[in-house]
Length: 118
Image 1 (cartoon, one colour):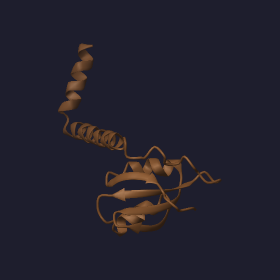
Image 2 (spheres, rainbow, N blue to C red):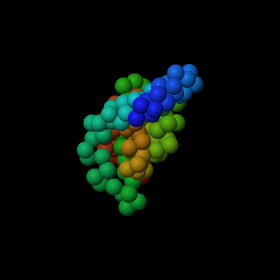
Image 3 (cartoon, one colour):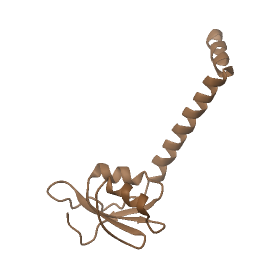
């Protein structure tokens, strides 16, 4: 056991290993934060009434007017059918797409799409 502690200590003294371990810890902490901040972001009614293909419409509310970057990112998870101020309307979104959208820190809320069909 004592030898194992000595080996761990010598590894920690190595600059490269120490920097890699710190970088890994930071990445893991960031991923944990992304997962925690998704809690409560998706409305409970999202996906309750899917279409025959299993997809549905959602409204994605941001805290600002979306720019080209945000629209392009949202298009990777569904078809953009328009926007109203801070809300972007997406159609054809899957369950996995909703999960992926919820991880974007700049999205405030994901709610069921109103009056839109795919």
